[in-house]
Image 1 (cartoon, rainbow, N blue to C red):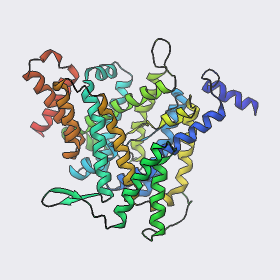
Image 2 (image 1 turned 60 degrees about the vertical axis):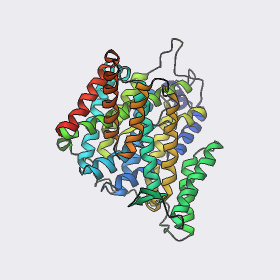
Image 3 (image 1 turned 60 degrees about the horizontal axis):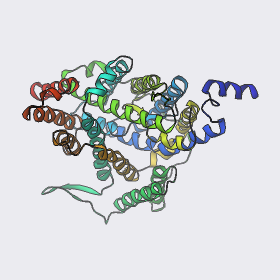
Image 4 (image 1 turned 45 degrees about the horizontal axis):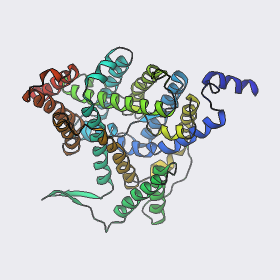
Amino acid sequence: MKENFFMIDNFFQLKKNKTSITQELLAGVTTFVTMAYIVFVNPQMMSASGMDQGASFVGTCLAAALACFVMALYSNWPVSLAPGMGLNAFFTYTVVGDLGYSWEVALGAVFLAGILFFIMSITPLRQWMLESIPMNLRIAMGAGVGLFIGFIGLKNGGIISSNAVTFLSLGDFTQTETILAALGFLLICALSIRKVPGSILIGVFAVTLASSLLGLIKFNGLVSTPPSLAPTFLKLDIIGALDLAMISIVMSFLFVNLFDTAGTLLGVASRANLIDGDGKVLNLDKALKADSSSSIFGTFFGCSPVTSYVESSAGVEAGGRTGLTTLVVGLLFLITTFFSPIAAIVPAYATAGALVYVSILMLSGLERLNWSNTSELIPALIIVVMIPLSFSIADGIALGFISYVVIKLAIGEFGKISSGAWFLTAVFLSKFIFL
């Protein structure tokens, strides 16, 4: 037993990072509880694209588990991964729903974006892209995606509804489901403000339980054999995604994932004291490689881009400092595959509050915008507003970059347009002109 403890201590460098096995286990459980809501939300999102919900549930758990194992064993970081919020909505409601591609082709686009992300992670391209995209536009992408998933959450909860005259209007609060969705959101907010671990998960479960007591859903058990993964396993259509019309979609998957990942990893690294005396982030390259490779193999399980979760900071606050924390999270995701009956009965309105709350968290980045430079601010706000209003992450980002270049040219700041901005503007303009 002592030899096993010594091996674990030596591999994860627990003493060097001033932590212990007990502390890492507690941190792993804390992180899992804060991000476990994804196993209920993601299958619902993906099933709306035509995927089998049971297979998507298992795929979500397995992709998250494998990604956590890679991050834990390769980079030794206390950062956990799972299919990302926002891009799963883009996958379902824009790429499949609006543009009419099959979910197999959409998975192919995610795969291609993952390959590009991995290439960028092992070459100077990553540094070039991160430095050449204006900070305001980077921030705007995250906030715009946040509004996008918030819009979907409000719609799924019945809190907003379509209106023939005004396009949108307040939903029908005489409906029990709408009231439960709103109460679920408020419960999540209250618990989060009080810093209760797993507040989002508690909110989803509370609404599901209330729905069961009110006879709106039927409880079908707690544990069972995991559903078959066959309906989605290795079903991606890479050839179908090699289409000129898919370029802007692939780019959207790539850059939203890239900037979200970079921001999350740097933020968690700071909290976990993974920065040396010279200001260098320890093993950042390994963490980026682990993250980017996860997006590739996640498509094999039928998942939209797998990415690092900012909820990992909860585990860090609980004392997590090494990959052992992430290893624990991965094991818990594997165990979760046996709880498919619960995932099957969670109604869409029960997860609506989670979507809206996550949306609000993603909007917090707007405080970092440079509000004093109008030429930088306007394109950023165009991205934030147009992503939800056009119901497309790709179109919103495209309009922002195009307006950025046009405004800079119009005011004579040609030299301030970075090569990355020129490149993306050319890509997006080509989409509007030729496709």
